[in-house]
Image (cartoon, rainbow over all chains, first blue to last red; front, side, top):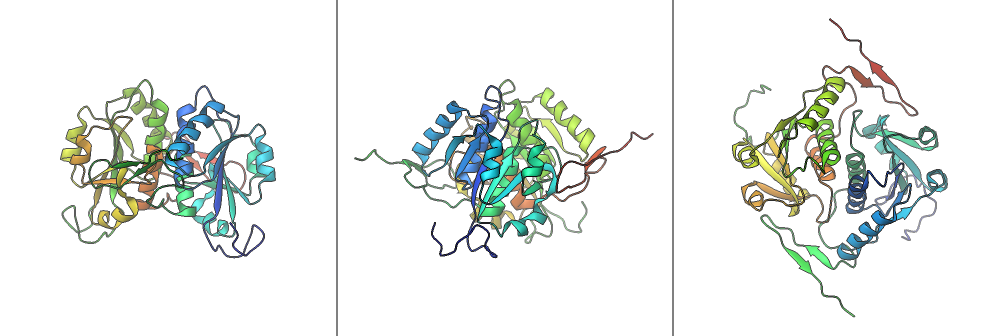
Length: 189
Length: 189
């Protein structure tokens, strides 16, 4: 990632920011599918990893198997202490909440940052999160889906995914107007 | 919606298209939260209704209560026969599938349509859907979330939600940099 510039807050964005996601208040018994969707959406739109609080090794393994097959470097990492992830993050912490400022208004301010952490809470968001975040941002001030909010924010920050395989993919889709075409790569030495 | 022009395929898009969503293969026992997220995302990004196959009256009621409180005209309507919804739709039928053409490439062709039906399948998509759709479109050729795909496509078609209350809302959020501010409107006569 050497781009000849130092520091995490250049005046102008010279490239797409690197983005990580933090999911706070996951309920392993109840949320597996929603959090799986969150992780898959984060991956496809180019996030580097999802910190998961509380940790859920089974879910992390499931996403790891997707990555092994479809490529890329996305990972789900355990976050026993979500505040530590927020406090030590070297960039903008963007808490996605229906109560925050409009994404439209915040986007230009986000353009200064090289690194962005998108934080989404569960049903009960810890009040501290509003204070610890650099920005509290709403993608629509309405009851909503955190999967949708993360996907749309990532798309606005990094653009639509480009066609083509992720690095190291064993399986790749060839876009089709009708039907399905998938290339499988043999396991090599 | 009188705009002085007739027909559903004007040469240039003069305004944001009206969008509906069709969810095929919902599993009432297993999917309630995911399909709820799908409906909420569709609503916040300005879809008019979600056709739900098979019907799920409980879910439709739950979304109805959100609309009663937060305003707008979004509704979940039962679709016993999903093919009929697709066949009778007066506009472009856009099947969102990881196997389709890139959204980036299809967007300019979609700009001709006044009315768009976004179709998302469940785990098993009926093969007929590929054939019956006007477009098969991928928001990233990767394992994905239908919630994310619908949200991002809607955002690309209609833009980010604007702040402010939906028509008839009893509850409205006032955007805040920190914390929460909600206005409750009294029940009037």
